[in-house]
Structures are given as structure tokens and as C-alpha cells.
Length: 365
Image (tube, rainbow, N blue to C red; front, side, top):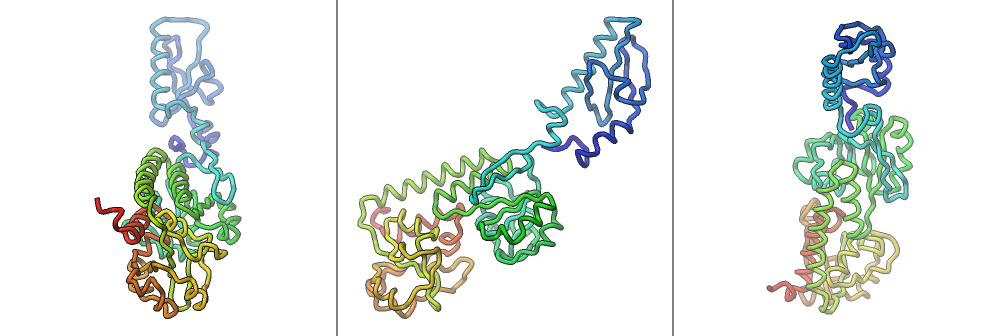
């Protein structure tokens, strides 16, 4: 919540001392009080148009019209403050959200300034309606186009700590727990929260959307987005459910040859699309793969993530796989890499594209 016009909670005692308060006593006489304690009426104080009004009960005389006037002022003052919460609570309001590193992160209820250190998180911020809160991003955060208006803070692996601090964010969103050790303590010393969201499958993406939505105060919008994405995901899974799974090789890059391992986000997408990654048992997320192992895998289809941020890169099958069943049968599919390697809302676009490529007969209706 906003702090009712004060620059910092610590300003509150000084503001009280600085005010000379004019009040209408219940006797109908005006009095000037030098301190709030002298002017207390029913131990109640309210902020009206930036001035504190305090009421003083007179015991020597009494009039009903004056009492009514006092009560009207009190209720008007109550209406001007933040609803349902005392001023002191508004100044310190916070909540705790658990992140993907298993940490309970304390965050302000009202987050107005956020920095994203991963393209997928930047996309999520905009997708839940919080793009106007983004003040910093990495050089790789290029979607949506509006994200480019935020200041650059370096790349994902080497962000500038000084630049981040200078932008005065309330929270920094990071994509892997490995980034924590680099600068978490320095940011916490600046009262900047660090939140980790590190999805390894589509359910993890939905969780990330929910987390970012709650952080930015857009929980309802995030929930609606997740519902729509789940519906599209279920539709794909139902369409390919009775189809024979296709053995797929995912070529992340040709020279050197890298692929998707057990921990890769796209491995889950491949499974949901009615296929089996021939490298799903390889440890890690993006392992380097030997030409001999690739040839021995004999994939029935090859996925080339290309055409997005990579441009025309990775658009050719590696030499070791050019005699594979996938190439011989013409089952090489180029799919926008941003939809496959960025675990964000557009990952469902990637899922749909893969499923339609691998099982076109399931989507003829």
C-alpha cells in the first residue's frame, strides 16, 4: 500500500511534532494545540487533506450541535484514509511468497518498480499486466516490443549491480538459483528483494506466472491467463493422446552439437506434444552431445529451434544426423526458438507448433 503521502515511515513522528493543530472543541470554541497529546479526543486522529485534526473534549460545557459537528468531522476523516487499514499498517504492509529456490521472500504489497534478469520473466511481467512496473531488463529481453523502453542492466549472466541499484527497484526477478550468490546480499543490503522463478516444465511456467502476478498485484489477471494456457495445453494433449509417440532429436546447436537433456524445459514440451526425446535420459539441461551418439539415436524427427531471437542460426541439421531416418523421411521441423527455450506464456505456442508438426493428422478438424 502507498504510505499516505509520507516519503518514509520514519517521517511520521517528525510530522506530528511539526503540526500546530486547529480543532473545533465540543463546546464550539476553536483552540490551538501545540502537540497531538494536548488535543486528543477519544484517542482518535485522522488525516484530512494533508492536515491532522485532533478533537478535545470540554468537560465544562456541552452542546448537542457541537457534538454532531465533531462526529461529522470524524467520519469525514475516516472516509479520507485508506479503506479498512490503519495508517501505520499501510506504511509497513508486506507479504511473503515462496520462490523456486525454496526461500520465503518478503515483498511489499505495492510493487511499483521491478527489474527482470531473464527474457521469459520479462514476458511474464507484461503478460500479467505489469509492464508499466518494469524499470530494468537484460539486453536479451526483446519481447514484447514495449519491454525495450526499460533500461538495460547488462545480460543475464553478467548484470550490472551498480546499474540495478541505481534504478531503485523493490524486487529483482531472476531465472536461476545460481544467480543468487552473485549479488543477493548486496541487493538485500539496499532493501531490494530478490525472487527466483526457475521452471523446468510447463507446470513450472504456470507457477511462475502465478508468482509474478501476485508480486505485482495482478493475481486475478495471472490466474485467468493460466486458465487459458492450461485449456490450450489440455486440448493438445487430448488430440495426440492416442497417437504413436515420435522419437525426436532436439538440436539446440549444430557445431558444436548441443541438445536437450533430462532437465531441459523443452523435454516436457516434447512429451506433451506426443513425442519422446531420444536424449531425455541424458543428465543436465543442455548437454554437449557426441556425433556418434546422435547417429546411434536414429531419431524419427528432428526439431530445429530457429527463426526467433537466433535469426537464421541453427537452421541446418548437423552432419552426424544427415543420414538419420528423420532426414531421409523429410521430418525436420523448424520452430521459433523463442517459443521453445523461453519458459513463458509463448511456450504453449511452441507446444502447439510441435504437436501439429509431429501429428498433423490430429489437427485436421
